[in-house]
Figure: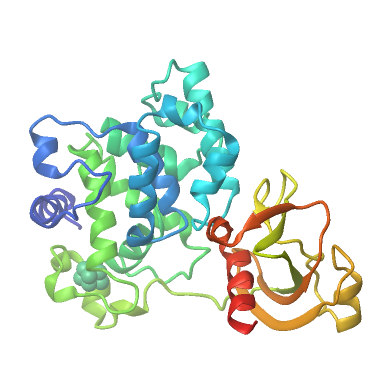
Length: 351
Ligand code: SF4
């Protein structure tokens, strides 16, 4: 029988000493001194971290909170400014939801984040994970915060043989038992963050550092001798591949950009003009026929980009010309979404 209070005490004691110093975090010592986490900062960091790593997200978080220090400041931001600031974080639907959520907090909640998981979940773009994370970390609610890191720790701790994704509900249930208990446990915010830190720094995906792990005494996966083989996996279907063409049309030092439709992938962002993205590669003739303007189009090779649901091979064609576009100087291209930046850089390298 797993001694949950002992396991919790060991992990929280480890967290008291080993907690990562993160830009958005109120550390365990400050927490014990009564300092609370700002829900705005917790929410913003969680949205950013859903698609990228801590080192990549940190400069974005710092620049967002310098520019928009409160949720009311963010709610008043221009859509285009926020989209440009988000460029490089990928997955632009999240940036649109970020604005929608900030505006809902401003308009419907007087600029104050609601403090329950249920009310947080009702905000635009706030899913079950983010609602649980904000409820636990900012409001110390006993919410079950389960991301990929926590799933991995649970799969190993309990040596769950069922492969993911089918095992996900069971992994969530097991994580929940460590959070709520019959009578409830203390420090829910620190518990959620301690598990996240354990998964990120010790119970790592490929090479868990079990000899440094504060909960190895209770870990069934550790006892098997091959903890890294958990969670068990079913073979993943390959990501589908799509093909497209990006057009780098230049006029002197300026490059032609277009504003993408508000809905859909990279919606509302400025980008290079492209063909449709489809299942079959484009021939040279098709690529030139789909160009946004007449010109002496030159084939400059291709770049690869991986989106969440598909991989894209994007041929790059370049020409000089004119037309009704958003003409952008060379230094302005660095704010482009990474897929277009890659194409623009490929052009520069090959020209
Ligand atoms: Fe992960 Fe190893 Fe700790 Fe088990 S003992 S939780 S496998 S790091």
